[in-house]
Amino acid sequence: MEKDLGREIMEMRECYRNGNTKPMSWRRSQLQALRSFLQDYEVPIFRALNLDLGKHYVEAFRDEVGLLKKSVNLALNDLKRWMTSTGAKLPIIALLSSAELVPEPLGLVLVISPWNFPLGLSLEPLIGAIAAGNAVVLKPSELAPACSSLLANTLPKYLDNQAIKVFEGGPAVGQQLLQQKWDKIFFTGSAKVGRIVMSEAAKNLTPVTLELGEKCPAVLDSLSWSFDKEVAIKRIIGAKYGSCAGQACISIDYVLVEKSFSSTVVDMMKAMIKTMYGDNPRESHSVARIINKHHFLRLKNLITDPNVKDCIVFGGSMDEDNLYIEPTILVNPPLESAIMTEEIFGPLLPIITLDKIEDSIDFIKKRPKPLAVYAFTKNEDLRKRMVSETSSGSVVFNDAIVQFAADTIPFGGIGESGMGKYHGKFTFDTFTHYKAVARRSFFTDFWYRFPPWNNHKLELLEDSYNFDYFGLLLVILGLKRSRKTFHVN
Ligand code: NAD
Image 1 (spheres, rainbow, N blue to C red):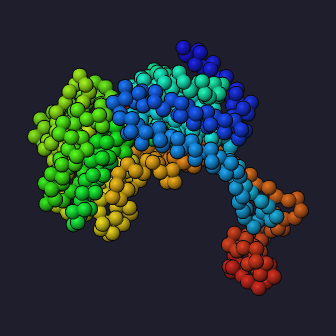
Image 2: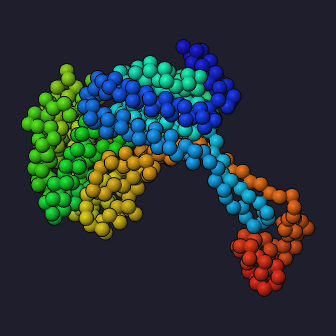
Image 3: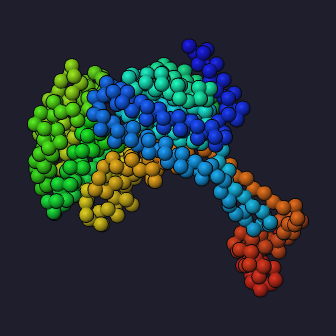
């Protein structure tokens, strides 16, 4: 296996070196093929997502297939513009010159994806990597086997197999891939494996993008209008339980509210869960399932912890055979318990009460930087402080998760939640090197650029860095001075 993998990757590198992936025509044909795959295989994709995660096909379309179609269309529409060099100015000292930023592909890149959005998080980076003209190896997660085998068995029917390959497998295959030399590794997954990826990449000085997780807080201000409260609760419940049952990196991990508002919040959340999932959410087709027994038991342990279980105010029922966990709400689990120190990644929602909503800023600042901070508030001062005083991949006011669907703003983490960014043109940039190309005429030079040195040349050099051409002309004509004569003994 190792030998074959190494050989295949060598052949892919050769294919890249031959320039096969660089022409716009190749990139366009691959993106069009990817679009056809999404069209032709829409129903099998829905089935695979349902088999792996119990996702409803509407949720699957909203969060994965629909977004991918949007992304591939954007890449096809904007490809020419993205591939065009942009002009830049050089300093005056480089008289009669021009410069440009020439986008060039990075080369042979590796994309490693997780199980929770197994199609979306595999193909979204793939779209940008292809648009940027790279050869790509994709390793989907072994924990979503139906989606992984769908990608491995069908993508080769659509894409150029010499330049784009899918390698299936778990950590062992991941490790074998990390032993190879890449020009970029784009990894989505846990911080634990992210650290392994980064240390393996360091051996070859390979750049990495790490799309990781963390605990994303939602600050819920005591909104005075009942309409605003209702909207906020709907968006919180929809984001928490309605996107892969909380198994999403940008899911709301916990909610911060003022003490006096918490019982209202709990009552409204209970009612909203009923509205969305009925009296018995277990029977609802709109509740995704936990990916596997390991994660089921991990989540079970979080709420059966003796210090936590009495904090459950809603839900808490489980069915191990069906990997089902009821949408669950807890109030004030101990801050040092696992549910409040580890990323929850499931349908459990702790509510933490504070004396004043402004205390939420300190609460967030004391913890690792999250992928997203959500705040439901009309308080402009709080909004400003949230943006300027907390640090996170993104900040969203009055909603959650919607930022993932945007291709106009970058998506990515900071600190423990990752590094690098993508979506829309940012994905193209992530897989592109902007080569600086500068050009000068042989015609003439400023005399003061070259030795022998004297103080007048020092003054003119400083003026060149401080003024535009007109200012510099005034200096040369003696009509302007920028600094006093300078003597070094
Ligand atoms: P994971 O880190 O366990 O696995 C991710 C991928 O890495 C899988 O393909 C897996 O096979 C591979 N892998 C595992 N061990 C490896 C090793 N030793 N060497 C090489 N490859 C290895 O993550 P997961 O459980 O699939 O996903 C959950 C995590 O991903 C959560 O922390 C979540 O927050 C994060 N996540 C982040 C984003 C984001 O966009 N920032 C999106 C989804 C999930």
